[in-house]
Length: 397
Image (cartoon, rainbow, N blue to C red; front, top):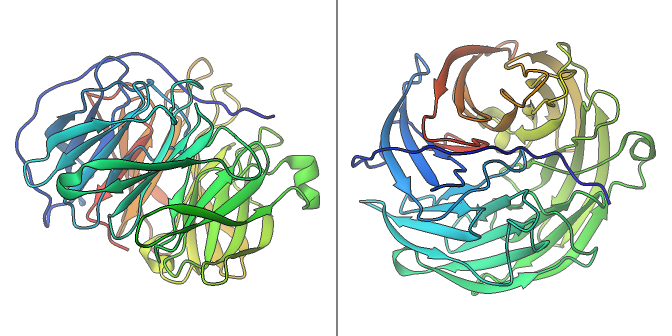
C-alpha cells in the first residue's frame, strides 16, 4: 500500500479578544499545535491582503504539527453558529458556540483516531449543519457525529468502506446534503455513502475506481483533496503521485439520486515553474454552481527541492473534461524543509487565500482574464506550528 508524504514540526500560541462573524471577511486557521492547539480568527482586508488577528480559540487539545496537505481540519456551520476544530494529536473535536465562541467541549470516541498514523485527516459538515464527518487516518475509518443543541457532538458510528481500511485524508458532503464522498488514496477508489436525513447515519451505496484507466497504471491515480460542484454532479480530485511532475487530476460524475459514480477520468496538466503535487482543487464562484468554467488546483510541492508549490488554473465541464489553460507560481520551497508547501486554498471573489506550511497565510489577487495569481501579502500566523487548513468566511459561492 502506498503511503503519502505528510509534514510535521513543533509549537507556539497567543491571545484573544471578542469578535462576531458578519459583513467583515475573516480567515479562520487550524494551527496544528502539538503543545496546545488553537484556531485563530483574522480579519482580511480584501484590497491589501493584510490579515489582523481578532480571536484565538484554545481547543484544550493537541495537534500533530502537520499532516496531509489537503486536510480540512476546521469547519463552520453555514449560519456561523458553530465552529469545529480537529485536534489531530489528542484525537478529539473541539466545539465552539456563537456569539461568544466559547468552547462547548472536546468530543472523542475510542473507535476513531488520527494520531496512530501521525498523518491527521479531515472533518466535513453537512450543509444543514446537523452532522459532522471525520476522515481518520489513524484508525483508518470514517466517523459520523450529530450536531446538537449548543454545538455539542454525539457520536453516531464508525464506518469502513467495503474496499477496506486506508489512510483516509479527505472527505466532503455533497452540496445537496444527500451523500458523503470519501477517497481511498492507496486503492485509487472513491466511495459514495448515502446520508440518512433523519439521523446522519451512513450507508455505502457504490464506489468507483481509477485503477482501470491506462494512465493510472503508469503514472498512478491517488484521489486526494477534492471539490464538488454546487449542483452535486461532478467532483475533481488532486492526484499527488510522485511519478513524473505530479501534474495530474481526476474527475468523476456523481448522481446522489440514483447512487451512482460514473466516468472516472484522468487528466495531465501543463504548467511551468516546476510546480507539482496536485493536492487541492477548488471551484471559484464563477464555476461552482454547475461545475463548468475555471478550476483552481493547488499544488503542494515537495521538500526535495525539485518541485515548487503553485497553482494551475484549468477550464472544466461537467462531462467531466479538463483542459489546462494557465498557471502561475505562488510559492517556492527550500531543498531541506517544507517551508512554503501549500495546504488548502480558497477563493473569495477576486482574491485567493492559501495556507502555507508552517505558518503563512498567503493572499493573492486573481486576474479576471488570465486567472494569474499575484501575491498581495504573505501574512504570518503567529500561533501556527503546522498550518495546512484554513477557511474564509463568509463563503462567496
